[in-house]
Image (cartoon, rainbow, N blue to C red; front, top):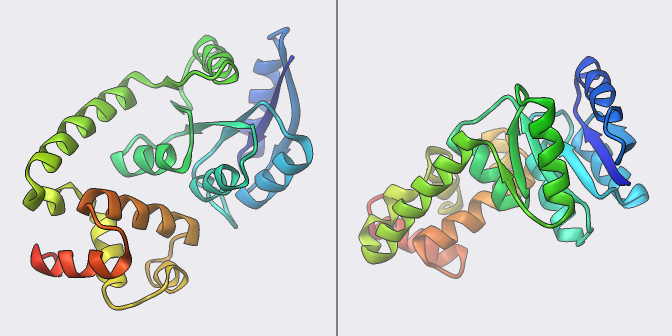
Length: 214
């Protein structure tokens, strides 16, 4: 049996999802969570094989919860199941550790295929999301070849975080100022380091000034 945890704050959606999943003989829904904190606690207690994680939830969003699960080193594999397919949401979820990304209008068969893929250690991406990944790899390859183009690889949110970072603000302070989860800030900072090819916050701030980002 593949043991599944559902993390979503929309009760009616969760009920419908449970009905769909029960039709699969090899699926067992072992628990539900209405926010990211509950999802992390439930994963600690139940250690499900797969977590279907909504990205926009109260208390702690799905990206923050996924990142926390990754840090804890739990074996549960996260599939983002959301209504959002913008670049920022996609890359935040995947950087946090999600192994799959699906939109909520996915067919029941595709959902079942994604869960089974995640359980056996594979990834499953919505076709539109896969296209974004390919485009991002192409863009990053240009950034590596031309370091001065690094700033153009940063998303708008990453630029906002970088500007705050350059003032000496901590992740917690940045989260408060930008009204996002602290875990999300941490993910952005890690991405900024990778894109600017720097090892720490000080070097990131210096490079940002050199590139005219600030």
